Length: 361
Image 1: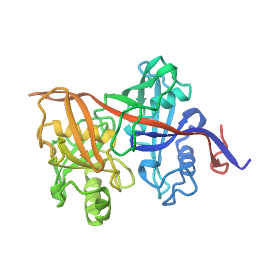
Image 2: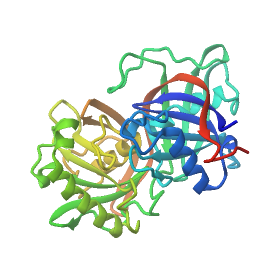
Image 3: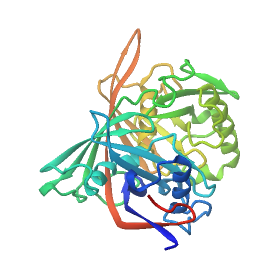
Image 4: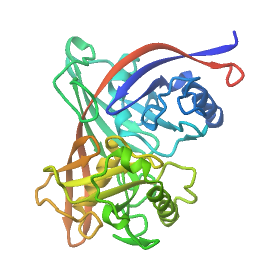
């Protein structure tokens, strides 16, 4: 045998796609694991032609699942973002879209038993220590992928997966506002640096001479904007205590503008070197929190209700986040955030990597 076989599920989770793998079937050592994932995805080629990636950052993600030793959690979810072309793996962030498929995948893998009707699964996102409860549709104790739930950026409808995110504040930096400020000025651009579900640098689109309504393709073609944004992101990352982020996908970058299609705010999200075609689930929580916190760059239209329904207008439609929060004279606290996504099992079997990369357990 010149190749090592690794059992996997290929699943769409939200608006992302990738392999879901039992952590026990992968090397423990992170350096070796990174090499395995690079080979598996085919990173290093724009089309990932020698792997199962899809040539875009939303299709080069990997979910690794295992039984949890956390008394609260049923399953641990370890995430990896594999670069499309650079042969890099980032274990720092998590991904909420891929997390949409963790509940179904955990049942499919036999890590969690299905209940009749619906199955509630407690998930620990080990990259950030966030806690998430997923409600999966399981009629006859089988995962159902058919349903009437629709999410912008995915064709058709599917069974809903309801997600409730808890303990998402400061997962990467230890603070809601890592710089201690509601607004910092970096290279002449006012930004809010915030860590809720995903560390982000958030600015108003107008600060870059943009409307905030540009398509993903229009933004990707604007190389001058990306160069300026990246310079701001790198400097802001240092201010957030994240060190040199020039080769890391965190912090992510977001732009906000006044809504134009009935939402709460218009938003664009960057991964960070390309525009997200829709919106990251983690990024949506951070952007919604930025909208709710008075005095930030996204303090455009603050709802008064609790929980607050925040609708983000993204490049392919809208995403809704229901945020339970508390605001007072002494501070601002995010309790939890809820979203509805969908997932679908696409394939199951074995994916192969050269034995020269890893010989197996």
